[in-house]
Image 1 (spheres, rainbow, N blue to C red):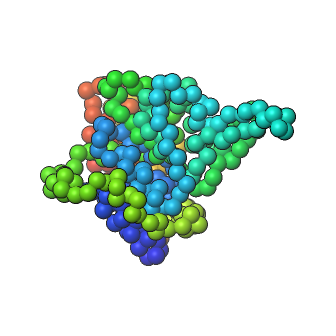
Image 2 (image 1 turned 90 degrees about the vertical axis):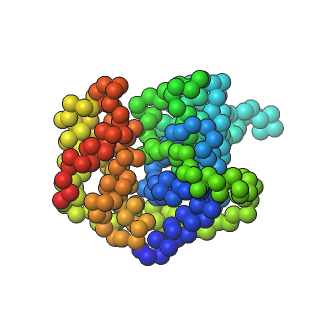
Image 3 (image 1 turned 60 degrees about the vertical axis):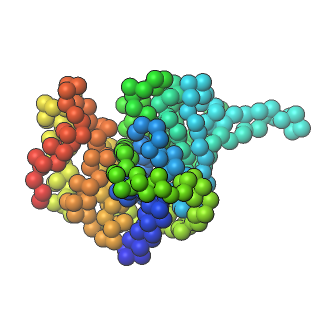
Length: 306
């Protein structure tokens, strides 16, 4: 357990040399990866979303593909297409960028819903079906998507089914005063990426992913999770409550967070650390006047810790 903690701490430290002042967000992204989920980063352009993806792919040693989502992007541009080969007299499938261990779906909500849906099977089943043939995706398979705020021009809101495929959603936000000063005085962050070296192997990542389900969750913690789920379903503040899939996501992320902290068991603080990122995009407020983030914080306060 301590070795895993040291490995994760090293990855976070390396990443933080380029993505300044965002250690918590970096840990949350790593939590999503180790819990075998996918992460959506929603924020305005220019705060480092794409740079974070490039940095992590480099440090984690994963094969990496970036898909720039636009309004004219087609599902075949993501999955791949069969092209007739004259030499062999048959169609040959050319894989698309989805066949990578880490996929950056950049500005995912600038594509049409039809194209967005091309990711559904890949994210849920870690495979794609083309022309009746199922093709497995590499392991680990991790989608890190970025999304612009919905009020910006040229965006298509992600359907609830697509949002639910993301285990976590988070924002990077503006840097604080001192961090931004260091950023302005420092080197170009993209130029620094080429100097990075992988500090973990793919086999190590798979081993950590396999260890996450082994982290102990006590009966009292299960009671705590169920209380959160039941309150979200009964409260008049929410249009819809949390689904069983959301409950599983909370548990898996809490297990990953605990393992990355060097523990073999989950404590309530682990649940509270990951909860806003796991349920913030799944809860729908009853009225537009309600702030979803504030509602999540209120939900945490209302449930007593066992």
